[in-house]
Length: 254
Ligand SMILES: C[S@@+](CC[C@H](N)C(=O)[O-])C[C@H]1O[C@@H](n2cnc3c(N)ncnc32)[C@H](O)[C@@H]1O
Image (cartoon, rainbow, N blue to C red):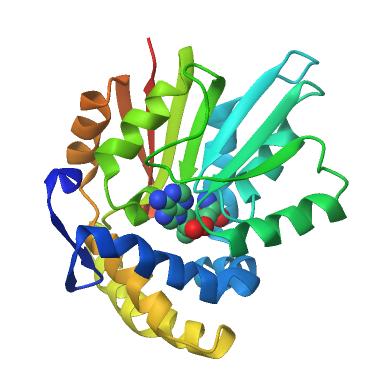
């Protein structure tokens, strides 16, 4: 399935014109921004921390003073960027690009509170049209963001464009659980517990129903690998984590 080539798309299980998906996604993250980080911990029972640690290990920022620039697309409140700064040396910088002003505002407050506003920069940007020059980052990451972007193929091409030659692209995204027993449990959890948590914490189950349903719509790892290759990324691979709940996709600009 080449999502970006279609002129309609899905919002959860609803068919919506491709042009309307972004506005609906923006509404979801506008509603959840203030409670986003708390909900991540509750929904994943803290597991998202281990998944992001694996991502940061793969980003592999230098531990010394060597310059290293990360672009974290759909970076929301900046979690991956803060973790990368903590893992890297004094030359590590991160740029968070996100389309949602509310998520960015929460991130800026976090950066300011931790005195990291000089090393983590927040930019209002659409993944489909990144406002950065060609080959300007050492690594580009996107965590739990790509499935929200209406034209995935366009965003992948943009992320490849801004990566320097020899730079690495990394994408963390929910995948398909195919461990017998765990799949049924995961299904039950996703469609019942997660929306109920959303209602209790954010006051609305609908955004979390959308997030769960959008996971079902996302291409399987092999299909996503083909999209990454079509965008110009090479040595494309992926690794499943937590029984396939999440996949870490990797590709290089060579
Ligand atoms: C599930 S959150 C992930 C946030 C962060 N990466 C993390 O893992 O904590 C998805 C993010 O994608 C952003 N997003 C959705 N569509 C986007 C687009 N077209 N361009 C840039 N960001 C987008 C949303 O605003 C939201 O902040």
